[in-house]
Image (cartoon, rainbow, N blue to C red):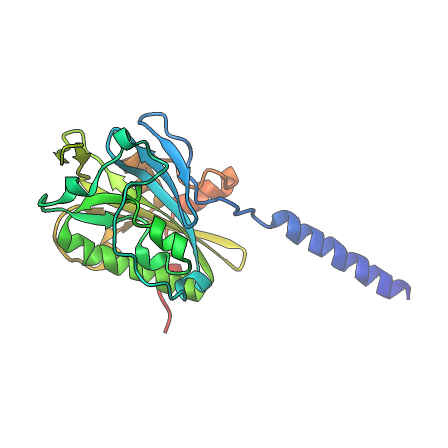
Amino acid sequence: MKKALNLFFVLLVSLAACAQNKINLDNVEIPARLSDRTERIITHMGYTVSYNADWKIPNWVAYELTDVEVAGEEPRAKKFVPDPMVPKYESATTDDYKNSGWDRGHMAPAADMKWHQQAMRESFYLSNVCPQNHNLNGGVWKDLEEQVRDLAAQKGHIYVVCGPIVSDDYQTIGANNVVIPSAFFKVLLQEENDRIHTIGFIYENVAGRRPMSTYAMTVDEVEALTGIDFFPSLPDKIEKRVEAEVDFTQWTVKP
């Protein structure tokens, strides 16, 4: 009996230690607040957006994508509309994009929001959209979006942050002067077997196609290019380690 109690006590201590070491990933996808540009944080059903009223596009869009959500069957919405949470005088309109030569490029893809009608509808808010090169939007950027969905289906869940990179000499479209990004970023975080892994990507807003690995980099490198602090809620020691390295074996979709 005494031996059994001792074993039970050891088990309890081990479980308690595991609980203490478990990293809290609630809202881990939300970057730190920005101080160098306009920012309005808006939370929708499927994503959170940091909206820039000066640029009329997001600073970033963040969300968690799960295997259950990827398996959703909600039909794709058909109409882009202004975000009702953005004042009319701070928003782009669909007319800004007409005959501009630029796609209305989703940041949180519609295909990631097919798990609920409201989430799908909100993915077509213009606060989630940037002027994007047509070839990029339907090419390598789409390939990355599909890779993320495959990873979410395989891993169970993935945390995603994406958005535009705006150069100092930016150009605009439309009567509302919607800023054209020079590039786009996407950073990902996953947890598997109590280990955190991250990876970043940068795609110039131009036509072209190269292997996905050539766009990949560490999250630290993406932070340097964007001025955004990603995954700030992670313990400092873990954040420093995972953002400085990339383990490509963790980001390959297995057969």
